[in-house]
Image (cartoon, rainbow, N blue to C red; front, side, top):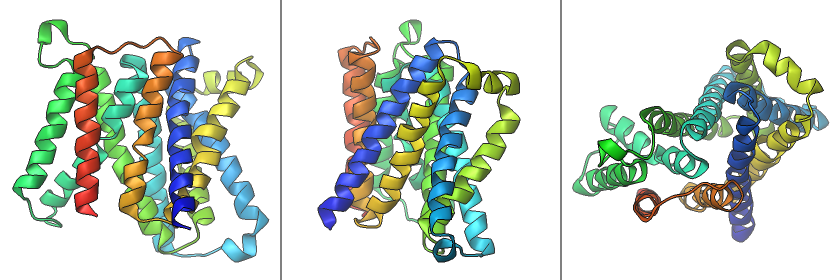
Length: 288
């Protein structure tokens, strides 16, 4: 049972990593990041809604708290997907995926601010380690030859912040209702948000485009199948273990970008990536 849960979370993380590469391919074809995000979530919503309808009577739960936390999760997913693709557009898949995984540090800082957790030298050391990794990964230590734009770094960190929000929302809502209900409400709110933000003409043109297959594949891999694996897997393992094995995502995204998309990182950037991932993993183990 334990290893089944871990395996499902790993599969979800691998699919998320691949979805970053598919998004990069679509952006190279000229598609807007907001339109790409919209279709990723919309295809996911169709999958979750279908899953929900198959067992409607069993899964339906009416609760204002469930609705509130699920909508919050949907806002988190919308921000995460959008800023993730904006970061890829401004930098690379490897950089964007790694910066997104600074999410546990945002959770820690918010916990300090809200006095949910007490600060300690260990926790501040982890924050310092992640900051050092970001500086090395983005090239901020040498402003004259910076390897990642300010916009790319800011979008990647924003993706991390929204990633923390959607995990928090899903955790809260999963204690109230079934995952099928939570995912359906969350991705419905996601679609409503992105429909208002995305270019409607460009979004409509996808349906008659030769790239429609890429968009469907992105939605299936990056939302539909992967989130189903994730919500089933996280119920069969501990949150700490799930957060650790989900680190497969930036590794998968980096390999996809380097091997298939021609992205290049120098040794200092690899060092920065390693510092971020190892620090966040260590923090997750201690926090658990």
